[in-house]
Image 1 (cartoon, rainbow, N blue to C red):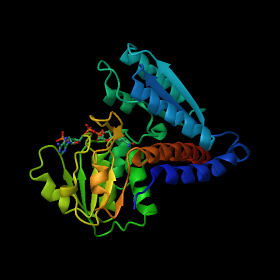
Image 2: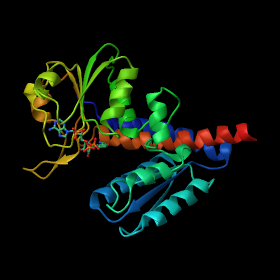
Image 3: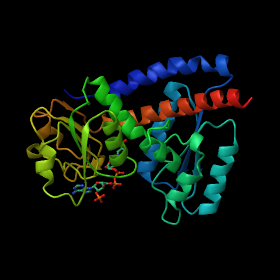
Image 4: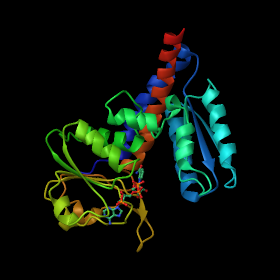
Length: 288
Ligand code: NAP
């Protein structure tokens, strides 16, 4: 079975749109997401456009602020601080990657934890690892939703996550662990990766290498989640880290690229923006 992130995200966005439609009467306004785009990298422009379109569908206000690639780090940090202080802004996202002269760590730290819709702030990350309330990072959150929608039981399963980045591999592994899977995290130094991958009942691949996972690395009936977004060197088309055509016949469940994890990531960004909006309403009541 192929899980369509496109279809699932369309359904979830329609549900969110119905929820948000009641907000003006209930709260006086809709949630507001501000996306900062530095420079004019075509991939970043396309991601930011996707976020603006999804916001429109859900009924969230979206402001995209564009700044030139040579903006100084201080100017960018000042912009973020202004948005942190603006009560009319609920979520702030700075599109990554940033030009080399700007520290991504400093940018992520400067975004207020309460408005950190990406879930990248160190305090959100720490809260995730301590099982405290936090804003979950969008891609891992979207993966868990896809598994749930496909009826995949996580508890007790052997899961292998290939990739250990802060934004995908590590948090996906943590969310699977919290749902009582037994998790192994593999990376570029892992020895005999094919043998390890074959042991997986749930295999998550987030490395950024076109068609890296071949049929011989997947056991019959495995659930395969492909996070990678790459260009196929032969066709120039978008493809994942998994050789979909070869692996699909063996997998019980598999996600396609495009149309799999990607749309779910944006869907969860919408959900996180609504969550930040509602949290600040609750906090306002507590503070009053
Ligand atoms: P990243 O920060 O570059 O991390 C890549 C990870 O893959 C690293 O942990 C690296 O190991 C591991 N790796 C690289 N080559 C490997 C190999 N030959 N064997 C085993 N492990 C290997 O990448 P990322 O940000 O996690 O992104 C991964 C992919 O997901 C990219 O294609 C990215 O575009 C995509 N992505 C998609 C979404 C979405 O919404 N669909 C969101 C985020 C990212 P080491 O740690 O040992 O270097």
